[in-house]
Length: 337
Image 1 (cartoon, one colour):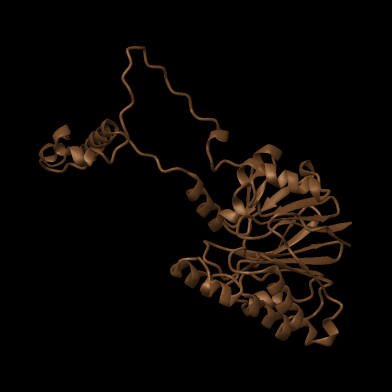
Image 2 (tube, helix red, strand yellow):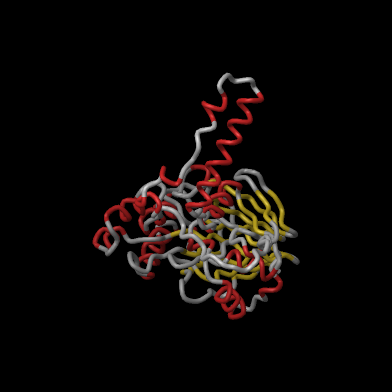
């Protein structure tokens, strides 16, 4: 049994379950763990049956629940190395040191420089490298940039214990790397990742194959380049972005800079762009087309549907394609083969 279940798709969270043979993969985890589990139960999918999570890129609407979900289930997360690094930087808080810690660090660095200079026989090493660091070197204004000093205590200091791995926001039970253009397998599911044009570190789309069925996930595209068109050929299920209506976006509430980003070649596909692909480049092979990542602010489901249907009607041989619209608020019924 092969199943394709869209749990959510939109600007507030994206996630899809791919089932093939004895393997279940969660594609993106853009909802909270609690909501993901709830959506899976509603769709007839058991959360504990998941074997892995695979991430397309590091934007919040694709990774919001990845840490908690992976930890709770103890399953691996698949990233490109660039996406993993970008995600880890985002979720890891920047540490601030106290003023006294900074002074101690400066003194230690000075001592290290002096030791190296003396070892190398540098003349007058003490005068050159042992300049003392004093508290008067930093003004009161400068000190505001430091973290506050911890309150003093009379108690005997206790050695701090190292934080458990689970306390690290970037800790995951297991991380696996993949590269766009290099197919790999997760259990019974073959995965073909491909590069997509989007403003993220290393964004990817996917074609999943199980039991002879091919399923594509292609959202968050500024446009559809030749490599993506090639990947989308011959699929049985096509999840394709139809993000915004051009007029609604231009007249909508987004700041102008955000509108420019969405309209750019590393932004999102408009209804018109998706329709143009379906009319001119789509090979017509998919039994199901799912329009996804539909903006709640800059689009209407019916506008996306009408544009796609008009494109498909123009090609009589494609009338057998079934057209669905993914929702932000509820899972779609599973597509089963």
